[in-house]
Image 1 (cartoon, helix red, strand yellow):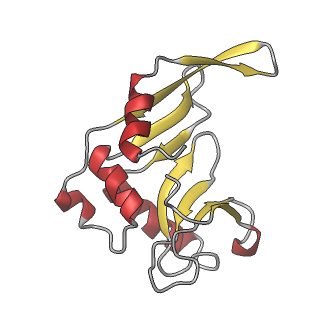
Image 2 (cartoon, one colour):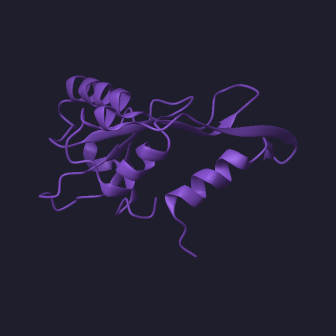
Length: 152
């Protein structure tokens, strides 16, 4: 069943920390944290924002999802628009062989150096793809997490 971004964010916001299981025996409490919405001036720092991501940022500027409360080592950080712009610039400089024009770094995985990248260029053949950029692997080895951003 398809759910809107608003429904998903409301559901995440209302959850209490959830114990998970690590190695089948150790409880690992997780939490989800959402910040206040972005405004139009925040969104203006990025060109070609996919509609689903734009809508997400209008509901929450950033998010920390599935973050483990005990160690802070696991989870996903979704950047706010300004942090996404800075992370994208840093990625373009540090990984110029792997980076493509139009890459947008929208998040990172806690405890790792993996980056969450969206391909927002409407003129590109891979528009809407969501990639996980691994720190040691080149672009050809990159992991496509979603073929389109609309499932968000």
